Image 1 (cartoon, rainbow, N blue to C red):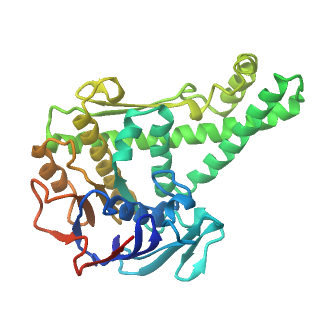
Image 2: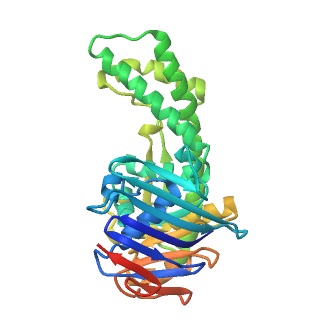
Image 3: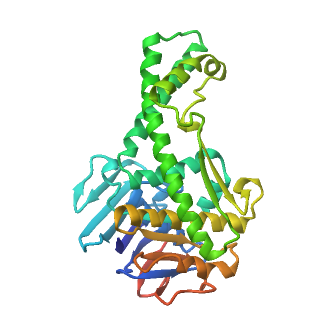
Length: 364
C-alpha cells in the first residue's frame, strides 16, 4: 500500500499543506512546532478515523477556521487508486468519503488504508496504565480484523449497562434477574471473542518482535504477554463467573471480570517497561512493536501498510536508528519525521524539508 498524496486544510497549525511522496519513502524535516506530528496525525486519521492523540474536532481545527479537511490518495498492491477524505469541525459531525461517496459508518473506513504509526504518545502508552496498552491492541485488531470492532462495540455497550445496574442497586433500585442475565450473556460471548483475538495477535506480535529485535541487538530479549482474568474460560463458564461475581461487584460498584480489565505485559531486557526500563529502551521497544505489527499486516493482507515514524531517533541510542530503518523492507513505504538528518539514513529516502517545493506549506 502507498500514500500517493495527502492534503490538509485548516488542520491543527496548517492553513494548507500538500505532500506528494508518490510511492517513495520520505524523511520529513522541520523544526519543533513546524507541524510534522500534525501531518502524521492527519494521515493516520484517514486510516483509522480518529486521532491517535485522542483529540476532538475542535482541537484538530486550526484556530479561527470553521472546519478542517484532510484528503489522501492511496494505492493498493495491484495499483488501484482510492481517494479518502475527512471533514470535521467544532460545530458538526465528522464526515468521511471514499471516492466521493459518503460513508454512513466509521467501520466502513477500516481496512481501506492500512497504516502503522509510532509517535511520542506511543511511548507514554506503553509505559502508562493498562487501558493504554489495550487500546493499542484494539486499534491494531480493528484494522487487521474489521469484524473485531463489532464484538468490541457490543461488549462495551453491555458493560455500560451492567455497570449501570450496579450503580442503581447501590442506591436501592434492584434489577430483575432477567436483566442481569441478558447483559451477562453478551459480556460472556463477546468477552470470550475479544480475549481470543487479542491473545492470538499477541502471540504473533511477540514472535515478530523477537525476530526483529535479534537483528538490532540479540541482548534485548523483548516479551509480550496478554494476561486476562478469565484465561481460557468458555462462554458458559464466563457467564457463571459473572453471576457469581455480582456480590463483590456490588461492593465495588463496577464489573471486575472481563477483557476491559486485561493487562498487556511488555518487557525488554527482562524488565517490565513500566518498572524501570530506560526511556531509550521504552522508545526502542515501542518502535520494534510497530514494525512487528507491520510484518503481521503484510503476512495477513499480502499488502504492506504505510509505516509512519514520528521523530524516532529522539532519546534513542544513535547506533540503533540505522538498524531499525533497515528492518523495514523496500516493499513498505516509510515516512519518518525529524528535526535534522538522522545519524544513519538509507539511500532510498527522499529528503523533504518543510518549505521546499516538494512540500507546499502555508503555515498559520
